[in-house]
Amino acid sequence: MTVEDGGPLEDALILGDHGQVEAVGPWRELRGRIHSEVADFRGVALAPGLVNAHCHLELSHLGHGLTLGKGFLPWVRSLVPHLREPLRPEALQTALGQMLDCGTAFVADITGRNCEAVAAALDSAGLGYWQFMEVFGFSSQSHAGPAVICERTLSDAALRHAATAGHAPYSTHPDFLRQAKQWSRVHGRPFSIHLAEPEGEAELLNSGGGALAEFYRRAGILPHDFQPPVLSSVVYADSLGLLDSSTLAVHCVHVDDVDIGLLHERAANVCLCPRSNARMAVGRAPWEALFAAGVNICLGTDGLTSNADLDLWNELRFFREGLLDSLDLAQALALVTCNPACALGVAEEYGSIAPGRRAVFSVLPEDVAAWPVGKRRAPRRRALH
Image: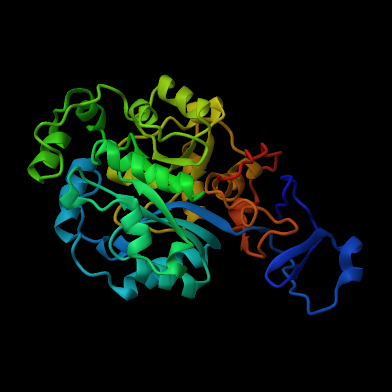
């Protein structure tokens, strides 16, 4: 079992009250405080409820017949014609079932069209969540400002879970990205943005040309008079004021040492989606360099349009198997518990088994529980303002 300081605890007792952890410690020390029925998890290892740092639940019904394994552009070309298809409730329930089955307790979900339906399903499933209302496009016809998206179209209940996201620097007007970031900053919410994912992103931002730029121009998204910033995706995002400790930069596949240094300097968080990147064949993020730089790293499953399932244990297995450096159990668990909880500003409720946290747990699969145990690095603590 994993507790707040990262150490495993054998023969442990967790005392809960009204859905919160009241105390955690050795059975012999706490058994005298038992005043109700005890659930016996003898023979298994418990971890905090998992935190999925990036997902696209509203696209769960579109995961069939897409072009995978040939890069980002063929994939997005195969996806776009289906985006207007109505969300199928059974597909959403299947996706949520995959999350619940692996012990997911909290999810950072990107949404644009079906926020109310997804929020209702998440509430019904008992999952904690942020709904990142995503801004996209360069024209007023393709975009509604964050204030409009969040405050005029959402119920009060949904607004409690709302945050903002920018789709990407190459697909979204810089003013819209600034507005989205400012809304989340004012409201004390995290901000998410896809950074450096497609192989053609660097060419688009440096010259305004290339196949990705041409696709977005023909789609009526990228203006013909677009002026490229002649900066990398990360440096451009920073120039817009988007990078700070409440920012979750998703993917970061095509980043160099300068980009990584800047992410660390700004205390930005990075969400890696290794299986999605591999299935789409967009490349592999420099995982080891991000670790070495001290960037707060977490994992997300992305969505069922680019991943086989939403099981974070499978994501963690894939990541650990492909990592050139060693990764012990404590370090691995941090990627799907305390690290994303800190990145998303919910570490006071999720990400560890400790007094005051929510009483939500996951069961370690036997193969994961057998990984070598070590001392995980302490997560970076911060508060959103």
